[in-house]
Length: 355
Image 1 (cartoon, helix red, strand yellow):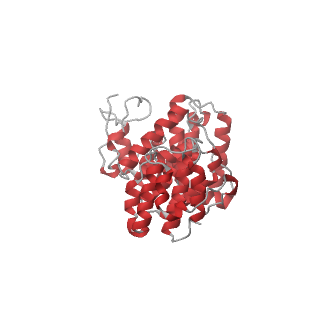
Image 2 (cartoon, rainbow, N blue to C red; image 1 turned 45 degrees about the horizontal axis):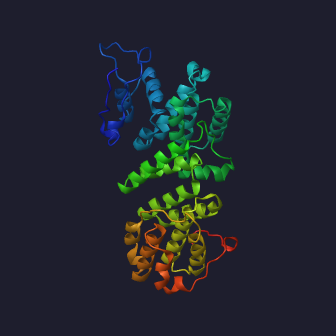
């Protein structure tokens, strides 16, 4: 099939991504027309709220499990959920020869969460858990990214966090294995590139995937805090820093000073004392490998009015030290640094929401 680009304004911004050059439409769409409707055309019509045939509904569902972002962009959660519920009744999906039933259930679960329809949400979750458990990590490589994508979207939703609180369920079942070191590194750099391009939502989606995969979680939560600060979402940035600090024991050596930087930064914004954290940071910087190049200058500038001139200058110089461009002694010109004693790691306090 010749690659087809979607042509709908309903999904504006995603049109260049929707290419179907490896799917066989034979037997899936019944049409008396001389030209059979193509997959992209069917999804376009679904997004535009056109009436679809039963066969076309099945086609739309079979496409959307691989492109759940289109559901998110169209905001048609209830309508998509109905498509997935019908598809799950099909004998071939029930037999699950291709191991795609889990994708349908993931997408159905996501849509019901986003639509706020909680009547059967727990039973859908239970079906999802059982299906993924039955796979026993037998997901083929070709489907790995698809399972990771929808799982990351679920994990990143406020509705899922509320679902956990209400029902007290455990973690979301994972069908795909953890990323390799190389894959994780590639994704992290991709997210960083998106951050530099100010594509913050896309960067956050990748970071959520990496936390889902268990890839360097302390460092990733720190990156997520940076994105939230860029979005002027200080409360959420603080929550990410809390999570990062709680994982400091497993963090890379250079990541601990970064977490402490944010703790000091947040306390400055709140006009709270941060002297004890300076002692922690002095100790952290005494360790080998505690510095690494870090881009944060524009964040400091973004908050300069709230930070004040002196705090902004201190943070700028501190960033130079954390990046390895200057030695810690360079900060002795600041009284609060010069007078602080290094605080041993076993005496470091806990941090919670800016305190």
